[in-house]
Image 1 (cartoon, rainbow over the protein chains, first blue to last red):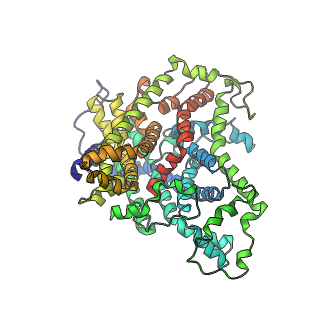
Image 2: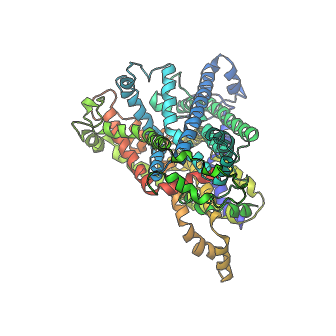
Image 3: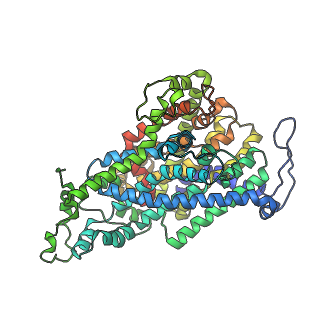
Length: 315
Length: 309
């Protein structure tokens, strides 16, 4: 019965995920093939290259790869760090909001809903030489040309779009913290700063960790934003995804697959380390939090508030 | 809510229901709450306005920019004057091919959503309600797949589809999109099914329904809001997809809207057709923003379902 219900999904995922990943592993062992001059398509019979595509990463030809690798890491690290801090701040503000919470929540979904491609175009216009960014800070920076400023532009655009998302997930975590804990802390004489450090942050940590993990894994595969905001093949912002896509678009599937495999392993390692070291809990096995007795509307965020039930259903 | 000190009132119901906490020492209960302070209230409003401004200001700027004439696209007035619809007229001109790309986006995102729901719904039900071997493994696997770098999937499929002659077809866009849409759908639907009281289903079965009937006649109608929310989230994801769409198409008539807009040369001879890009951007985004405004509560519930539960 269960097998019958689950197998369609596994079949489809096998087709669109397991097959491509295995195929990428296999393809990565072959050289970049020649191109059939008649059709423009790849010729059959790429020659077997063993691990050459991987070892060449460590040779002179690997410069472009390492550049993309460091770009990916740098952009991910800086933007996720900023998103986490700003997102947490947003969540704390929204949690304190007296009224208009529904409106703030709607507006916080707007950056999330805007397609990344469109937001990249929007920021390209904002960061134009004559654009509003230069007007406001009264400079003439060429934001979208090669250089550090291009990375800054990408980070700003990325943080704008995703910090509210982190804020939203963190807010949901804040809302399941019981008001009683705060009452007790107040009674014991803890000031607002102490309450933030000793109660809010530790208790919101599980939700925040999951949000950060989502963001890390998403940022590591960053593609659309630098691709459109700055442009494909730009050294200062080329990420691993862009590099792999560029190689594939030039029908160099061997190296492209090798880069994709490396990126895949990188993402896997980061996720694994994050879950093992920090204990981010994706499956929802951690202790269920208490419903907040004083909250009226807030609980509606958590449909059904059926955490206890779920535990039993999972067990 | 009561005027100046609503926070105090919202906290009030919590205080009496805290029997576990030690009895407050005399005097501490009378300490003024920071929330009652008008400065604190002011700060809270300022904070909320700052958050809203962060989220909305760039979008507002896009809206304003799309309504300017292409000559003053770099004007800095907060309101477009003179206002002009020329950008929209240019974008919607059939020769631009943008309307066609909107239709493509609708077809691709729509069929991805429907397919993901059809395939995912039974699986989600099994994961939420049935006990079977490897359930944890299946659940973990499904979450893990949603985090795969899309490029690792797109490249081999691109190679495969080149062989099939599928480049510039809808199926070449829909099939790879399933790689992120299906895990998302299963994950969300599982969360929703779990929240539904088991008793309903049990009583249906006591009344003589088979498991399948209970699912069709009791669970599914009740799960409709969850299914709908999942549909919205999946649709938004599929609508916003770029990497697959840009890799699998090279003919303008088959591009999805985000790709088409990014390749705009514009109705005018400008180097960077910012105005028409903003107009097109608004047209691509408005359906999503309307969805967000109408269903924000559900979207938030769906987005946080995976993270907080």
